Each structure stands twice: as C-alpha cells, then as structure tokens.
Length: 249
Image 1: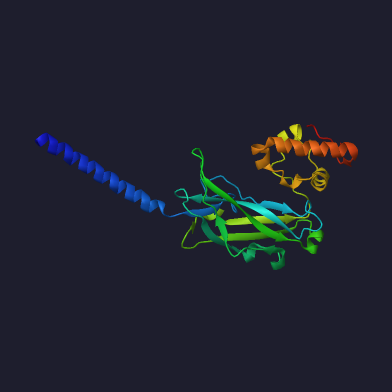
Image 2: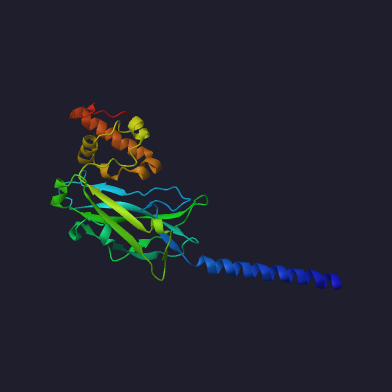
C-alpha cells in the first residue's frame, strides 16, 4: 500500500510540474514581435550585420504604369500564428526624401498566418509598399528614399530596434532583380543587361511573372518563358551593351 501511494504521489508531482511548465510556455508564447528582415542600421555589437536597403525602379515598368511596388520581407517571432496579425507603418520624416505624392501607404498591413515548414528557422511574410511615378525622378541621378517604421499595437509588438525600420530607395537607373543569378545566366536568359530584361518584359507574354519563386517551384514554366524569348529574338535580332542578345536555353 505504501508503495502504491508513493508512486501516485510522484506521478502527481510530475503532472503538476508539467502543467506549470505548459502554462508558463503558453503565457510567454502569446506575445509576438515583428521586425524587418533587413537592417536599417548596423547591428549593435557583437552583431556584424550591416544596414541594407530595398531597391526599386520605374525603368522596367510599362509607360502606362503609375506605380511600382517594393517587396519588403518581415519576420515574426513567437509561436506559430493562429490568425493573421495586423499592423501599421508610418513614415520616418527626417530620413525620407520622397515627397508625399511619391508613395502610398495602406491604412494597415497584414502578416498572414500560414503553415510553417518543420525546418523553417523563422516565420516570414512579404508585404508590398507602393511607390508612385514622379517626373522629377528623371532628373535625380541618386533617386529618392522612403523610410518607414513599424507601429506597435495590441496584437503585435516591435522587435529588434536595428530592424524596426525599412529603407526603400527608388532609382532612375535599373535595378537588377535578385533572382537573376549565375544560374539564370547559364540556363535561362543569358547575361543580364537592363535593355535585355526590358525587352523580355515588353515582348513575352507572362514575363512579368518570372521571379525567384517561379524558378524554384515551377522551373518548367520559367523555361517556357525563356524559350518564348529566344523565339522572339530569332525573329527580331536585338543588341545591347553585351552584343547581340542571346538566350542559352
């Protein structure tokens, strides 16, 4: 009898400790912190990350397009989201050189609750910030800058200070897409040039949808777009600073 009581006592203690631990984790996990993937200023020591900007341009936009969009990646810390988290952005006036008519911020943005892979090291989502066409950009060699910062609310708090703001640079000169890698040079579109990319966008149906996600998740469609471009170039030989445009696919 004493042995049975002792086992029950130990089991009760174990269950009690486990329940306390679960409650502690649950309370801690209710808070979520949001911050940008890129650093707007150098990380505080001992961190080594450097300030970075998101670049965008109207160079590749159609003449009828009055806006372009900067893709900005955010990170959420805490437990996996069970519902979408809403947040706001505000302009940092003393760091911004863009005029009010040169950008449009939404009343609120959404960090979407989505399944996260088991091997994921962070919960991320991407929002788009609208930049509006401006005639003065054509006279500005270095373009202008829009700096926004996250606004905390009851749903989500702002995380790391060095990543609480995002710097967006709007340039007159073209910006090479991040997804146009050496692999794209070798297997899809060939050597990059601004004129080549613009020619591709203007003459191949669906070209605007080609990006890093398509190359990774739907390489067959990415290859088809490259082949369509190759066919167009055969019919319309075109040159850029690299010579005659060619497509290796």
